[in-house]
Image 1 (cartoon, rainbow, N blue to C red):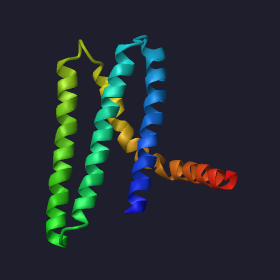
Image 2: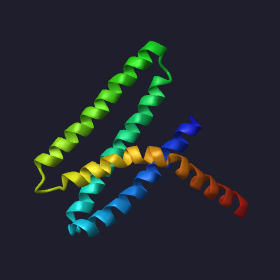
Image 3: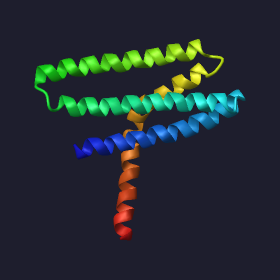
Image 4: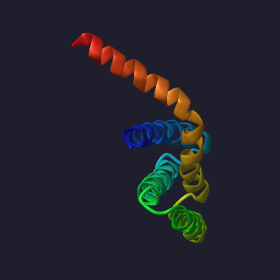
Length: 135
């Protein structure tokens, strides 16, 4: 499970990096210097929570038998999709307080972090090699 934890932290780092970049770029483009970055960070917090749920779900599913693990995995996937949809609906309902598209972009950082994970893994490996070499 050590590899799973490493992947989790790499994806977490990718989400945080993307949140910073998206918040700055979209704030400059939209001219909303407070609401848009806060909305992106709120969506990113949801993405981090969903990533944490995925990590826990995988850990639990590994301890179950095959059929039970399959059912549990499907149920957790439905919970995560429902949660994302609910958060987006709430964001659009309260659009005078948050920017719904910022929340949406923040949530999508989870998907983008999965695509960036090989690159992030290489960066983490270089950092770890450098730390070992310095010692």
